[in-house]
Image 1 (cartoon, rainbow, N blue to C red):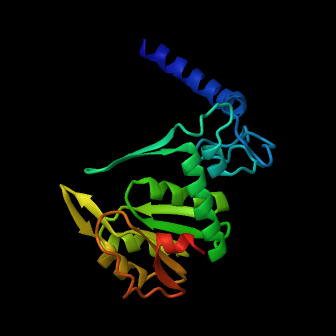
Image 2 (image 1 turned 90 degrees about the vertical axis):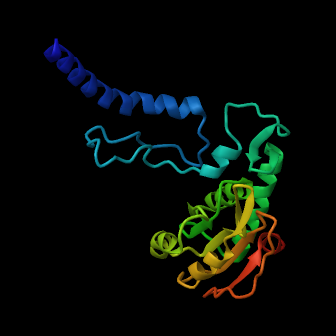
Length: 232
């Protein structure tokens, strides 16, 4: 029985390897309604090994943020909830219309700052609506987003960020934990000093703590609040 099962699995793997790559990929693309500026020329090279992972949908050109904000094959009420955000002390709902507008404003501000495709945009941020907006705005331009939780130590944050050299860093002014607010800008001050090529530190008013802009040594620019950033 073990040999029979093993042979069945071998045959299944050989079949699924070819058929999933060739057929399921095509069906998935059309079923999910991927929005693309240019469709794929080839799903995948049939002779490609499974590891390292091969390139799928070769030749396609699409915008990740567009596909999340305007999903095809779905009828979405713009006033329906896109995000339900909750912390220890607050709860808020963001509609699809509101999310799209916030991403538009953040995208425009990033473009005016000079952010372009393949630039790196980082977040020293928690999981909240502004983080989603910043990520989608960066992705809509074609920039690369990375996020690190503000409860991470400075050394661990720098291990990740120094090597990618972000041009913009979003940061929370603090975090809420166990019913108390804890500031995180002191760590942000240490972080930005080590980031070469950083153009802007943008601070989210995430918790009810004062935001002190002074004292940030941003090599290629300055620090500012998110509200100030959006006014550009």
